[in-house]
Image 1: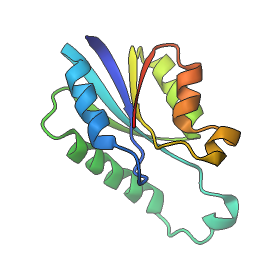
Image 2 (image 1 turned 60 degrees about the vertical axis):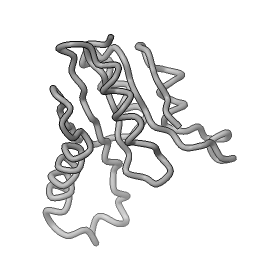
Image 3 (image 1 turned 120 degrees about the vertical axis):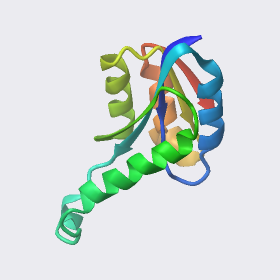
Length: 135
C-alpha cells in the first residue's frame, strides 16, 4: 500500500472524481496520507479587470470545502489549492512532497487531446512515481 497519495481534483464534467477518491481510499496504507490537490489556472490578463476584488481568495476557500466534502470520512486527508498550470504543477507538487502514487481522473480523449495532450497524459508521461488513471 502507498504512504502518500496525490489525488488531483478537477471539477470539470466527465471526470470520475468519486471513483478516484474510492481508489485512493483503497490504496492508502495504514497511516498513509492522501492529498487532494486542485490547481487554479491563471486568469487571463484581459479578464482580470472584470473579476471582483477578493474573488480568488473566496474561490480557494470554497474549493477547500468542496475537497473536504469529496473526502467524506476518509482519514488523514488534506485539501490543497495551488495556482499554476495543471499538468506541470501536479508533477512539481508530487516531486516536492514525497508522493508515491498519483490517482488522477481523466475523461475519454478527444481529437484535441491527441494533438495537444491532456493533463492526465502529461502526468502519466512525466511522473517520477506510480500513476493510476481513472476513467
